[in-house]
Image 1 (cartoon, rainbow, N blue to C red):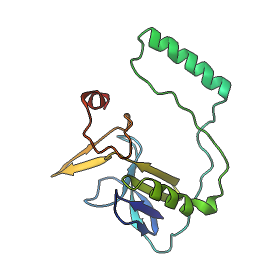
Image 2 (cartoon, one colour):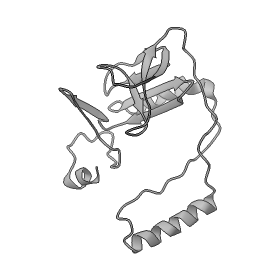
Image 3 (tube, rainbow, N blue to C red):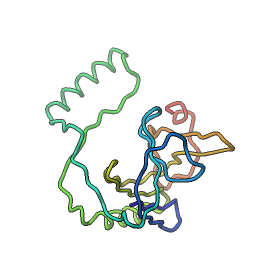
Length: 168
């Protein structure tokens, strides 16, 4: 299942799933984790219309381990071993999966100028998100992507400054 909405447009909903691809299609909804990793394109199929939830595949980090990692990071910054970094950890909580569509609708209404998506597949699991930034642009046969390292207010339509460009 795939549900998405481009900024300030109508919601699109399609039934189907993702299939691994070797070459990118001219059109389509494509998912790829990193350059060089497997890529998947959404294929419509009216018989596939449910959500699939995979068991959490990421190890959870205790508060104590997270604080220790933070201490190591501070030392690395003080020693100029790294210039800039983001320390994060997964926060896990139970969720009534039958309310996935309701959650998508809440996010969609909260962020009208963002690209909002929800997709579910037996291989990839279920993902839900919103991004105020352009993820991929195409001009002729050239694709360009933007790393989401900078943060930008959802209502901010101004171009990036030099600092933000450098971080990409």
